[in-house]
Length: 214
Image (cartoon, rainbow, N blue to C red):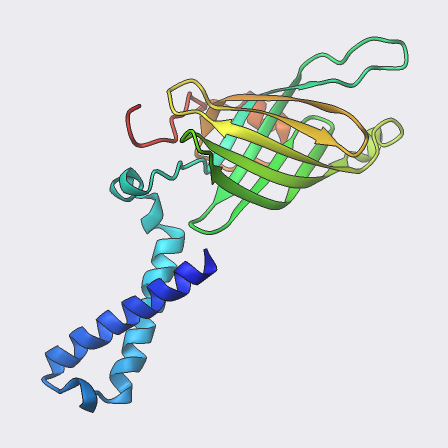
C-alpha cells in the first residue's frame, strides 16, 4: 500500500504542477521551483484530507467498497473457558471501539472486567468479496480480578456484515489457550471507553457499514 501511496502522491504533485504551470503561462522547462513547492503542499493537503475525511464519503466508498466500521459496537462475547468446578462462563456483555482512517485502524475491546488494546489491526477483503477486520491485542484486566485473570495476549477477527443487523461476527483466541466468539450487532458513532457506560447508553442501532446493495 505504501508504494501505491507514493506513486499516487507523485502523480498528484505532477498534475498540480502542470496545471499551475499552464495557469502561469510558462513552459514546462521554465517552471520555477516555487510552483513545484506549491504542488507538493497541495498534494500533501489532499493526502491529509483523504486520510481523515474523503475516503469516508459515500460516493467514494461506493467505488472503493471499503466498509466504514468506525465507532463503538455493542454485543456479547462467548468464551470457551471452563471453570475449575467444570461449569462454563455465561456470555459476557462486550463493547468494541474502532478508530478507522484511510490507512490505519485501531481496535479496543472492553468488558466489565478488562480492556483489550490492539497492537496491529487491518481490514482485509477475502476472495469471496467479504470484508473482515483482523487484529492482535494485549488484554489488561482490572486490578480487582487479576487473581483469577492475568494479563495476556491474543488475536481476533470479525467479518463485517453487508446487510442491516448483521454487524460484526467472529472469533478470538489467547495465549492462555482459550478461545471464543464475538457477536456485535449494535453500533453508535460515539466513542465509548467503559463497558458499563456503553452497555447502558441509548443511541445504538443496527449498523450497515457497506455502501453497495448486495
